[in-house]
Image (cartoon, rainbow, N blue to C red; front, top):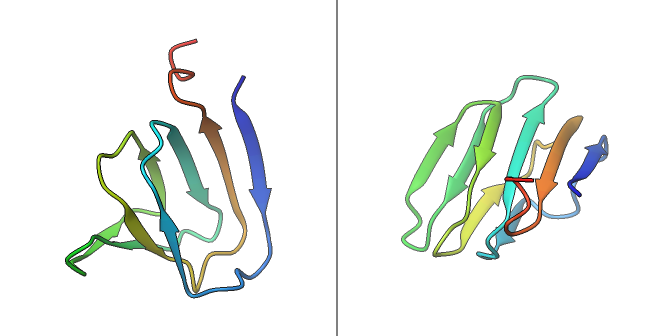
Length: 82
């Protein structure tokens, strides 16, 4: 069963570390802001305001300083196919 969530608060930190866990996420910024992520080499990538994030082999850091009014679906590992 997927976890559906909604967030309308300011994050407590400017950056958020995401570790690989085999899950899949669909995230939509309701204010249509771009999403910035950084990898271990501090290379920055700018993504669209709506993203699907699949399983990763390495961690990444999300710039969450402007994340507000977001909605998403979190699928546990192996849960997106059901």
